[in-house]
Image (cartoon, rainbow, N blue to C red; front, side, top):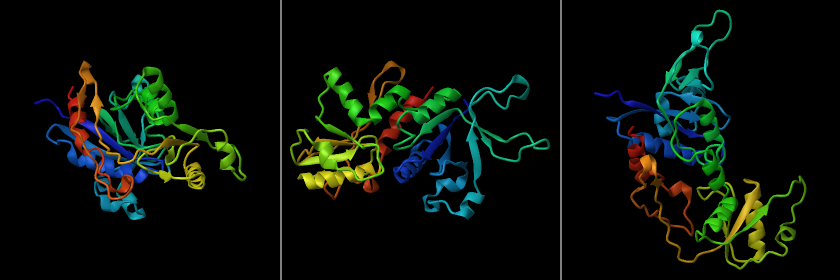
Length: 293
């Protein structure tokens, strides 16, 4: 029997979407077929620390208490090659933080074959994490650096859609001024053709964080100021009435385009709140197929 691939499921991160990323990571850990793959959680705290350990599998442990952290291992992702004499492993691996110095023991490592990022938002989805993995030579799932950077920025993505002839909603991008003082949003909106009602959202975030609707200029200004607390730019789009939303994943692994099952998120409010959305469950099957090497 072939040895099972060991997959690091990484979640958490620095962004405002940290909490939904934790849910996503735990759902993937529960859904992946353990008879085919060996998986383990990697939690990236909002302060930048990386942890591994079984306590991360229990969602009741979040946010992590000081006591829970004692049962975990603090790790660093290994970047770059070691010299042949002191080589720790030929596989991708984490190095467990420990004592350093003349009498320190050889560092403990945790090997794996594949990195599955379940991050949402800044650092995780915008090409930064992908760049780190590329530098480290670690196989991973999802967008490459260019694709992640391009499509995380909704304003720039629309220019790509326009150039490729892909239908999309027209939008106005409002950049946050470089100032510590008062921001007059009405001045930023001067000369823009905005037809109400509109949807206002961060240009570089997701999961409904910071999203609002506006039916007049006053509400639009308030929505943009809300976005400016979270992101460097706001994007303003026409509100589509009676919108029905569907989620679908697409992969072109091994030269064949495949799609996941179609998911229709259920919602009670005017727009889908990420706190009520169980993300990615129907997409895991496609990911598993992509991992079969």
